[in-house]
Image 1 (cartoon, rainbow over the protein chains, first blue to last red):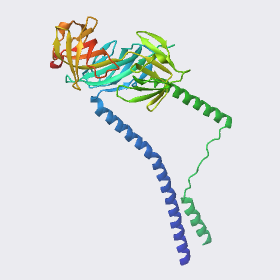
Image 2 (cartoon, rainbow over the protein chains, first blue to last red; image 1 turned 180 degrees about the vertical axis):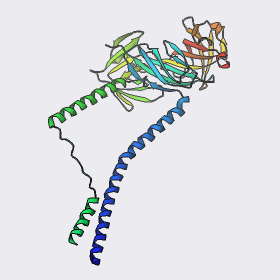
Image 3 (cartoon, each protein chain N blue to C red; image 1 turned 180 degrees about the horizontal axis):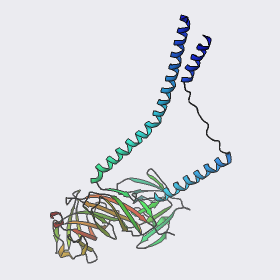
Length: 142
Length: 227
């Protein structure tokens, strides 16, 4: 076999192998690009869960939104509060008392026509409560 | 020699794999349009439902009620611009469980109102304006009980000292620390050191007022915190 032929064969093999490796790596990198956002989302979810668990000691009202306008004469207040805290819901027409043994709470509070200023207070190991004021508006369905 | 060269070249190229991009099946233009319309309908329905849930109102004391551009001041002291439309905006008065219609001139500076309508920033285009009673709800500790004139002093967390007149119409309740139920009480049960949750009728024109007639009080005995 001539020297030039051997060089041509080796060159051909190297070129083929190079092209093969290029295609292989390019495919892998595009697959990785698809995976990255999913991993990022998972991390985000984990971070949110961690934030929620650390803030569990605080009074958080998740429902209703402040200033909510409703057509029914009662409303369910949902949220989180320190475990085993005493929660007082005080409105101009009623008061509700709840021993928060689960951490999450859900209480139905009656509403008067018009504006309802509801104070939510939580006593947790202290006579100084955590407090939030919620304003909810009830108007009859016409 | 020629054959072996050709065979090696073919072998080299057979090792290289090229990705194949398959074309997705083509749907008919009509079917695709219907799908898009359905998706759009669903999105609109979801948005309407979301907006219904988010329907809100804002309240405050009327500072300016001249012409069609009003200004109200909310509980945090924020000024809110209210646009009144003479033909579209409806005005009402709330008294107990009834609403009565009002004219634009009936609402004056110093009235407490809440407004419904689309809100952008600190401006609201009023669909409806309701004149209502302002209630103030707060809590604190009883620092003094004066049986001569049936008053109590309540000190709040922000160090405001309120004087409350306890009248026969005042709804007075106390927490039973064993059952965690509320019980009706009389003035004689009120004592210094207990925590109290109070509802009073506010005075929109005098925000610094600290003496009120109590509408409702709920007492949490200090013994609850010593358990």
